[in-house]
Length: 147
Image (cartoon, rainbow, N blue to C red; front, side, top):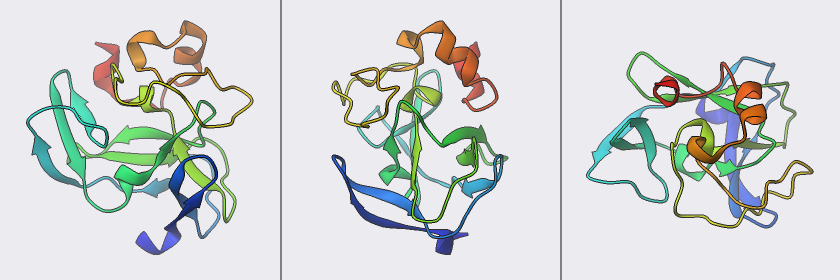
């Protein structure tokens, strides 16, 4: 699966992950494999429980936020986060997700630079996500956020 995306320059965001093949809705785009458990949250950590943060292997830490993401989160059998296409993704499209899909709070990136027509202006965690957007994300978020 690693040959299905690569790291490139991303407009307004530095670097990002881009699809090198087309993906269908609900297809796994990137498989999450946990590399290490972290002592605390950091800017590239994935929250996998109320107070548990990890680093994923490979390029997952490089996937950028978008307020109009094309991927969501599914927790796999190892506890890692798989990125799953919310809708069809085209070749050369940047792979994105909303950080609120996996983090209860976000403190590292105050201003959003996603450029989406749905941009909220700031990156928030699940705690601060409007109810309407929470509803739209059902089925594509880490389950511990619902507890």
